[in-house]
Image (cartoon, rainbow, N blue to C red; front, side, top):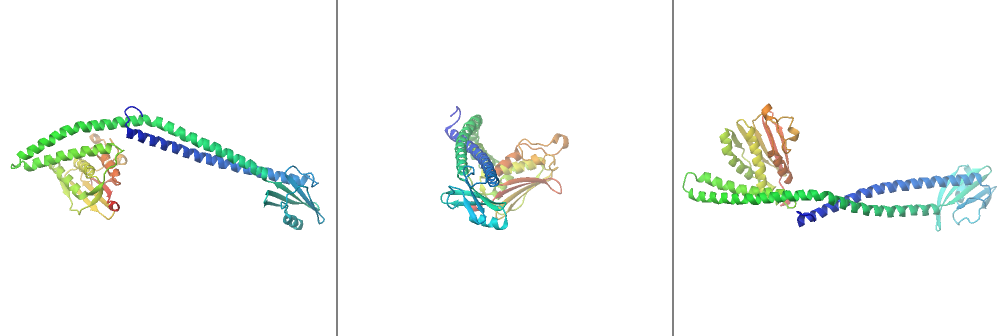
Length: 402
């Protein structure tokens, strides 16, 4: 375990390295399997060619049943008399092929399996006689078995070595990445710890101010200030959770309509200051499976993006269905530059607003895309026919997770 890497991260590193090793072994197994198949096929074809050549040569050039090559027996039928070479295994002779070739003159090849072995025969007419050569296939089978055994041994050794090399190289390749991720998580954790203290103080002071303003005209504004400090704390916790991929993100039943309503309420002061009208269409409850704080961040980012580019109005609507809930945010701004549409939800993507007067984009929509992906949903954008932009966020209801 390297310095700066925690025990859980070391375990994750080992699992990842093992997975890399198994993937390497799988790749080698496929490669070895293909090569073995090709090798065996080539050997089989070579053996068949040699066997065919030996049988043909024996039939055409051997005149005496006692003089065939080793491993080959000869039978010659002349005028109804059948001469059989010495030592021919019982059952290896194909008498039917001899009779058929004598009748029609056609050459025949056949394979015969008996209890003590396998044989291949070639039967041909040669002048006024019929000749049949019988070849013992056992040497070919022995050679094939040796080849398969050698391929199996070398393939197994190759798989083991490939797996070991994959684990070793994968671990070496992942160590710098794991160290960098560890430093990143440590920075996020330290930053979160440092931010908690001022947020706690801010929340405490806001609550004290709330008590003093209980019977004053500032009560509603102070109440909203207390609510905002709580939301900041929740957002910080959600950011810390999102930064650690080892943690499971908690999901609960969240009413997206209620989340949108709260986000719109928080955005109204900014909208009023900019002279933009926020219009939230009436919607029925729209439950989804997710984290309320993260969804609030996504909705807030969509509203912020719309307010920065709207001329006079932003329309928000929630459309629940059996399997999905769709949130649409429509503004009457200049619309989306087609040139940046493909990278609209990428980090740091932006349009040349200072040149064209069109909208600009930074991290907001990228965060919306990441949060949506964590919830198993999708986000898209398009230009409205009447002008302005329409951003659409779709989330699964998660009804099967209840």
